[in-house]
Amino acid sequence: QVQLVESGGGLVQAGGSLRLSCAASGRTFNSNPMAWFRQAPGKEREFVATISWSGGSTDYADSVKGRFTISRDNAKNTVYLQMHSLKPEDTAVYYCAASRRTYGLGSAAYQYNYWGQGTQVTVSS
Image (cartoon, rainbow, N blue to C red; front, side):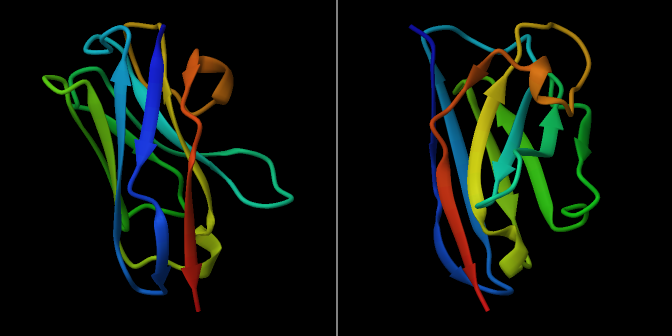
């Protein structure tokens, strides 16, 4: 059974930092792109960041460029999201996602086949 388990969420003041982790089990995703999405209350799930299987290519939503960094450790089957300069509008449940594709990146939810249960990030003003 494939599982993606996020951790690292919490409550932080505006301007602070958090590092999210997503550990995969049940299969390896060393050859697959992975991503982070988020969903704020009353809003649709939105793309945050994606990373290629090798980690050599990344892409970000405009709203987080320059503040968030996605990375991965294929030896640990884990993807990370380092978040700096957090803003109240970053408050959301953050979801990790993995694709069955073995190429490219992806910013659309339909491109991902496996999802974690989410971790709450709350940024206070």
